[in-house]
Length: 345
Ligand code: NAD
Ligand code: TDX
Image (cartoon, rainbow, N blue to C red; front, side, top):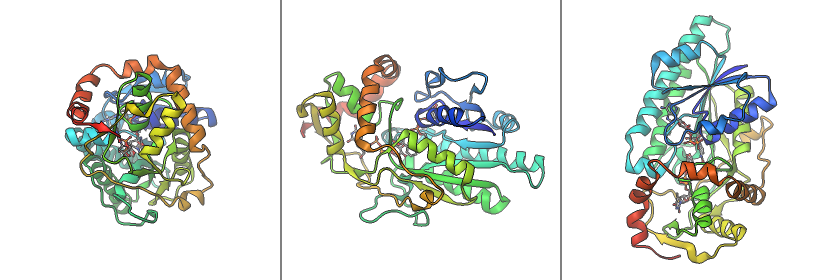
């Protein structure tokens, strides 16, 4: 297969590209805007004969139309992906999540029509469990209502609605994945796990929001990437698929303790800081629909977290380069006042 992987220079997209090249004969075109989160180094070790990186925006219609002609499927990972940044600055989230998804869908529909009826042209939209909003009890199933809480998750939900509309109205062959909180190598250090690993290595404070009892079901990036591949290959058109973690929910406090234990650093680094507004307390997914396609999470959290901590320890040059540019500015805006008013956790 020839695949256009948008956002393929980011954390999960680059893992998808790496694992897909290893497991199949596919060739891949990556379209990535290389925002602060996109990093060509994530693809640097891959076979240039099978993967090509194009720098550009998914909202650039002519560019996307041209690239859509080269492939048989589009997998869209491109998004602004950090909830806290969506609260500081929502605009880019909506531009990419709504206008960008619209351009990609139009490119897929046009190309499918150009090739004629009977041609298979698949679209996979990589979405998130955050579209369900907080889940006080039980587990979200794919047909549950969606009630996003943040500008990030609202933009992701809007993208999903567009995908569904293009499927219902024009019969576009499309699936949606809703992944749980993902962790692993090459995740931008703005997110909880890599932020706390890298701050702890630097003996800097770890800003734990609120009471730290928010619960997440963590999913290793290899498992997430493979799940997207399974949906690309075998998903039923028109359906969404939850991608759950190992099924065990963990409060942020427990994740923080595990990181500190692995690094041999003290709990006194942890600071209780004012909470994120609109913070969803719990997510939990029912993953049975995807398991019925033969996928299951393989990486247990303890082993995955230990390997992730080791990766950040061994790849300081990678994250030091990422914690540069606009990093200090972002860190001050997000954490400056929070840390000033912080207390021991
Ligand atoms: P990331 O921020 O590491 O990567 C996003 C990539 O998209 C970057 O390379 C960035 O440069 C690119 N991008 C952003 N705007 C673009 C645009 N307009 N045009 C082209 N490229 C653009 O994010 P990630 O964690 O790898 O997430 C990938 C996808 O998975 C996102 O759609 C996200 O919503 C979804 N997701 C993430 C998680 C998670 O825990 N990280 C969980 C569930 C779903
Ligand atoms: O400094 C922090 N302190 C803190 O307590 C940060 C960055 C986070 N947290 C908490 C907030 C959440 O309860 O940790 C939890 C995880 O936070 P993030 O890593 O920011 O992830 P989350 O907001 O849950 O969203 C992630 O999972 C779903 C991804 O960023 C999204 O892209 C994905 O859709």
